[in-house]
Structure formats: structure tokens, C-alpha cells
Length: 114
Image (cartoon, rainbow, N blue to C red; front, top):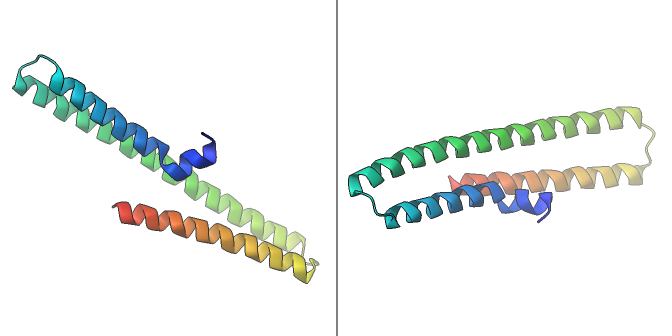
């Protein structure tokens, strides 16, 4: 799986959820006292929740940095290339609009999952 598919498919979320489900099933099927198992599951869920939050925060920061850099680079490019042909400007505008659409799609996916 490539980096692009991983980001779009939510690999990190799938990994964390799968790990939680697997750990929960293993603990439920293990020969332990119910109270001890529930206590362990609660602490494990808290720990995994913290790790998931860290991963989400790191990803959000990475996306934010990427958008800032892309915006700065586009601005610099336009300043340097003021003599661009009309067709070149149209192509650049189309690329920026497509990038904006992709970001909006991801924003909506995230908002819907909340």
C-alpha cells in the first residue's frame, strides 16, 4: 500500500481500531477474573485513546504544515512568474482548485466521523 492510499484510507485509524478489538477479544477470552479483566481493558483503552489522539494531532499538524508550505510556494511561484501565459495561469488555477477540493473532501470526511 502506498503512502497516498494509506493516508486516504485512514491506515492509522484502522490499525488502532484493529489493535483495540484484537486486544479486547484476547482479554475477554483469557482465563482471568472478570473484575481484573475489566480493569485492564479500561486502562488499555485509555492508553490506546491517548496514542490515537497523539497520532491524530501529529497528522493534523503535518497536513497544516503541508498546506502552509504549498500556499507559500504557490505565492512565491506567482510572484516570480508574473509573465506567465494566460494558459499557464489557467492550468495553475485548475491545479490549485483541485487541491482545494481534495482538502475539502477530507475535511468533510473528518467532520462526518465526529
